[in-house]
Image (tube, rainbow, N blue to C red; front, side):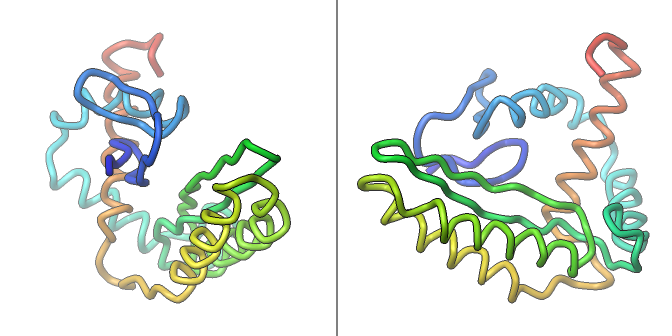
Length: 167
């Protein structure tokens, strides 16, 4: 199975391509354009931004950190159409858990209504949310997801400086 080059989520079917890179949707494809600049960024800069983010206030509630990437998994279905997504939230644990509970409830209500994938993917996404809610991140070390988000943020800044029309 392929993984999205921007957000790291699993791509089961379809997706978008940019050269050798794969993306789960158009939003990640747009973010992925910055990956061409990502290799130019020193690891020390990425680590510094990730650590400042980790120790900073939550961008959503302004509460105390640690701040990390919390993925919320959702699915909705209608007859023969099923759509699922992973939505990363860079927040404190409380805000991340709130987003995961909302995605879990959304999936429980709207996920079952498609054949056959609604019946398959709804329990998967519910279980993924429960697992994500139970996951404990390090309060002192940035997670790989937070490092990836920091690298993309710095790459977007670099791209905007290099090509003002891109950013």
